[in-house]
Image (cartoon, rainbow, N blue to C red; front, top):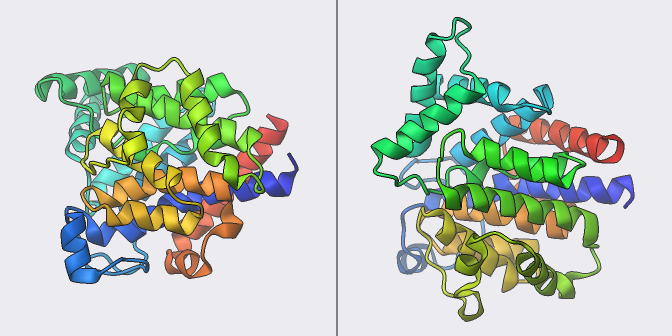
Length: 321
């Protein structure tokens, strides 16, 4: 694979997350029927919603994705502490939105870090905080807050095993849940394999290729994901399995980046996160070149600049790493 094609794929995935996030944010917590009644079929960046976002404004999905990616660049071999430091700084800056599980785990880690002398929670302290959060929630820690931020390991690491294991560990920083960890690992596996094996001129083979990836993996989660795929039953909740299935359906049943993201956002429910997850997959399949310019230009200059730097770093590592 040449450098230009690889960069197109990687940039497509990064921008796909942010664009899905921004397109879905005003629709979050609305039902598909309510969206249709109020807006028709949403195809453009809008403002508003419960977060009162501006057109093109991203939310916690993109913020945490960038924190993960930049933490990986700081220390690729063991990025947990570097990512955690960015999570903490982001929370302290008062974001508009943050999931309950993420918030609770991060705040627990902050408290633990104060006892370490450095103020920077260790890997163990992050995992302990995540376990404690899951316990406090009665074992209910299977939201999509880890999956929404997990695109970069599958783009950055030249080793498939390193990519998958790192994604799983990053997920467990806040979500101590088997399905969440497996979803993040499988999503990463798919992204890594697609960057290696799918060409831009193989669009008619996308569905078959993704099916083969699912069939060849040994994740327990796979049966849950493919259970209703053929019937295209989407349940856009915040549960990680539902969100992943919605993303897969959105990709399986469309043939362009634009159509996949639009379909995901118009499902409603946890629309920003589902569209962001979809955006990572659709972006790596179709590439940056297929993303509508109007959507790219709607994103903030800061988001674009950071993603451009991250894309270049990932390309360099995949080629030279």
